[in-house]
Image (cartoon, rainbow, N blue to C red; front, side):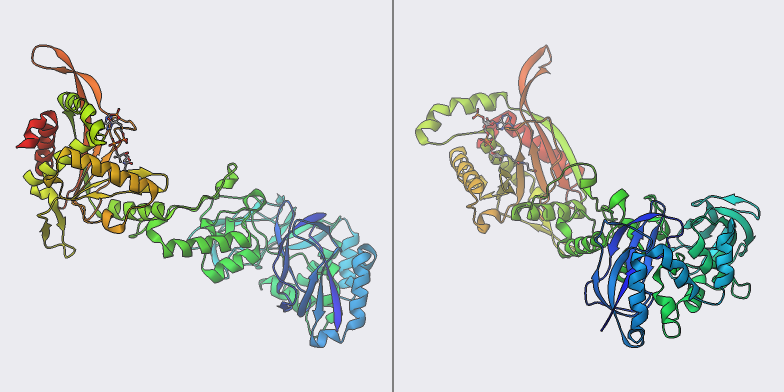
Length: 572
Ligand code: CAO
């Protein structure tokens, strides 16, 4: 068993970088050039490829650690042919601890061009091939604009060229600072990750190892080939030059995939702030990273973000109606990581809340709603109701305006049978009900429930009042039986005890109408001679416009207003 210690390769100028992703677990098999881990400088994200095939023994760093060139980062148990080169492995371990001294000697074993490379490193400048960084896709895309010219001084991060896919345009930033010696592409060309864009003259200060690699790569005969492949072929053939592979400090910085350093709100994969391993996972899972909120530093998308996003999507599919995302072809509400704005807490929804959410969404999406408003003058009704107080106490029954509303609704339904119908699911028929059960929305700590008072037209105010108290009590105690919540023809939602001038209730389908009642208030009303104070009850009647016409609603509401304004009509 031969253990090879992998060290941080040349970073193309960056002195220290952060370990942002450890993509493997101990024991995972890894091939040459597979991503081992991801490092990030303040400018770029770099995928560090494995220089050897084998199995990961362990990482020697943790996510979040800061490392520099030559630092040991992982141990690999090298497999097969690579194991035969055990002595070289040992050497690498030394290199890991003495990077500066060993870089040159290791680099000298890399390939023939090393002599000229070292010479280049010794001078004040060197040639550097500039490649297309990771564009988030394996496809080649069209070059639509060249933003540099020969002779230009270009800073790292400056736009070199603009690429355009069928989805987006993307600026390709320069991975190095330097002077443009040669442009290797033409507008209209198709480019992909790793393709050469230009040849730069770069300042050589920290460039020795890079330039050794560059010198090996810069070859007029191969210049238009994807350079990543050339790099592998020349510097790291697993079976022909294992010693070169093990020269981790001399490995090129170029294979590192580079993503935009700043989080950019974008719709294309290229300008999304995510490392290559995350991009790979997203591609494999078919996840568009533009929809995934990043929880890493500066909004970087982590693997966990992708898996959480997938989990969330699956959950939403399992319970689509209760989810915050759309259905029926309606665009989904984006998943937001609210913790980026402040402290949050996730509260589980009760069963009732989930059911209510599902029902409300179903009804809101299925029913074309119209809401009709009016006020009922309940001055006399309230005077009468208050007069019942003493008798109510004797009977042990509290009479509230809700009892009169339910009684009046029953009468209005009888007089306006359009509201006591449901649409047949075949869409061809209406079902007329010859019974009159009225649902009453009850606000409980566990959520909204709607017990049903049956046959309201056969009951008087005392009975209805007693039933309201009984059902509301059961609802609040969570003791309602399913049968007590079924069979409603119409629903009353009274917020009168809570407050408000008005609201538009959502029809409780397959019912076709619902009455929303707000708080009664004394208002000045013109009686033909003067303004008089009257107690007005604001009411809103929402209805399903597939089953009910505006005229039907107007008649129903006018009838209701008449019944409540003069309750003697209720006795007729
Ligand atoms: N205007 C002014 N006062 C009103 C009123 C109105 N429209 N309706 C009721 N009140 C007063 C009553 O007169 C009573 O006061 P008094 O005891 O002084 O007479 C007090 O409010 C009683 O309120 P209550 O809530 O105990 O009883 P209720 O019969 O009015 O209501 C119920 C019962 C179950 C409808 C109610 O408790 C409830 O849960 N309402 C919320 C319904 C809801 O959540 N709707 C929204 C659904 S959509 O999200």
